[in-house]
Image 1 (tube, rainbow, N blue to C red):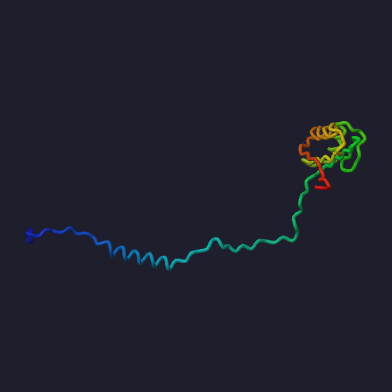
Image 2 (spheres, rainbow, N blue to C red):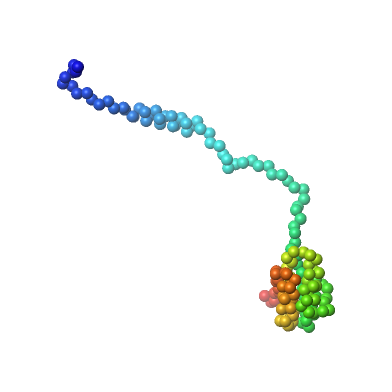
Length: 140
């Protein structure tokens, strides 16, 4: 039974404007009342140490070669200048240390073969870290 014959029913629609207004007020209230924590500012009390940790110095073996071909290992001269004798002397100077650095200080007038002998003796002894000592010129 339709008592209102000439009138059409209008579609009902929900008005969203008041809903949006209420949500904006709630968002503003939440933003104002929120406290933000500062995690980047941590107060840390580190423990203190009474003594410094001992620093390990790398084991070095200094080999000196003069112009006449004489060898000196850590201040001790060698009588036998063969490669095996130099290798044994290097192992004795290392005193069982692992991976020592062999520093070769050769005279400018020493033979190339004497330097190669020390390098070969280092290889036989199993020492792969070899370096050469140099000095700067006085005028430079």
